[in-house]
Amino acid sequence: MSTTNTRLGILLMIGATFVFAMQDGISRHLAGEYNVFMVVMIRYWFFAGFVIAVAGRKAGGVRAAAATRQPVLQIVRGLVLIAEICVMVAAFVVLGLIESHAIFTSYPLIIAALSGPILGERVGRWRWVAIVVGFAGILIILRPGVTVFSPAALIPLTSALLFAFYGLLTRYAARRDTAATSFFWTGTVGAVAITLVGVWFWEPMTGPDWGWMALLCVTGALGHWFLIKCYEVAEASAVQPFAYLQLVFASLIAITVFGERIEPNVAIGAGIVIAAGLFTIYRERSAQRRLSS
Image (cartoon, helix red, strand yellow):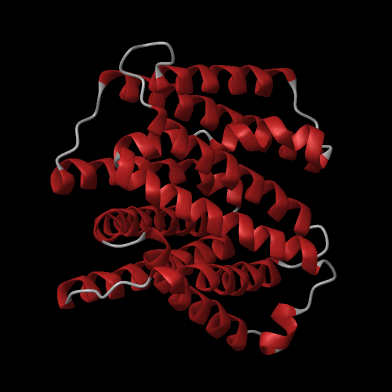
């Protein structure tokens, strides 16, 4: 992989994190005015259309993208992700963008901790140290046992657990299915599942909010397009550290648009979690280099 491609991959990842942060801000606004299930449903309709369009442009078309030897696994993946998105959007409304994202950044550590028992991957001593340190950072954010502790903080933690489980299922699915197949099932299964729920919570929307909804759909598709291109031109391990910038961008939106504040414990805890996550990525990358040498 050339340096130029890696730099382009980094720029695309930064672009994706910025677009996803915009999406989170719009989701926070819309879900504060309308039912979460309805907002996510409309967003997923557009996402499913995007997924089908991408599949149609590739060799073999939609039929090739849908071909899988593990349909039950792919369906479970799609259901877990749609559940995670609904929980996270609810967290934005209840807790705000900053604290929700600060807690959600723990998901790579959860994946690292569970990759051993679930996937049979080896988790070395130093990665366990990083996991323990990272969860200490989460405890600093949550402040359990302190009078100001909010049970609402458990909502984004649940979202992080769901997303980690989704990540592990995606790794497992990758052993037999292509990324294009997993992407196709993610969008279509999620759209069907959320429609079965969301139609019962339909609410009339104002004209301006339909504009925000349209922008929400566009940012979702654009963010995923950036990610697809990112992983086409650069190694995942090289660009993954920059995914943490979503917390930075989301925090800026939260402060400037929604008037949120960054509490000291949240800033310290998030810094610890991110440092532990970056160290985990570094250890994984080092292990891959040793195996390939």
